[in-house]
Image (tube, rainbow, N blue to C red):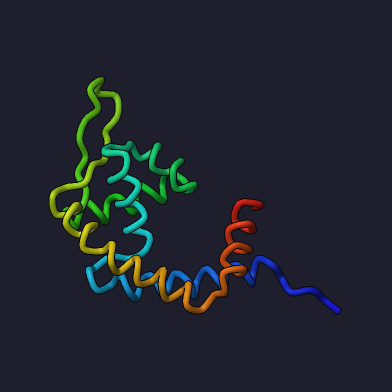
Length: 132
């Protein structure tokens, strides 16, 4: 008997989980991916595209495309680093307000997932993520 494809199982779980977060965050006009980027930038104050890519474990081109969308919606702005060699991303006032408004919706998504998963499943999920 064939064993299930672990990649398929993980991707399905990730799609379903993302859909829950996206549904909640849609109330403030954000996706989970956008919220995650805003959160990283907010915590750091300023990040270059390369630093943000490393923090999110994604490639620079993906982050660059996503940052352009955030800039288009006035959620982040580019500012120059003191040495002028690279530009940094920082939250705009609109970005700070939207991020703050999104936090309770993110927590509601967390609570919805916690209501479905047993505590030992959440521990297993964390262990699995750390192992891979």
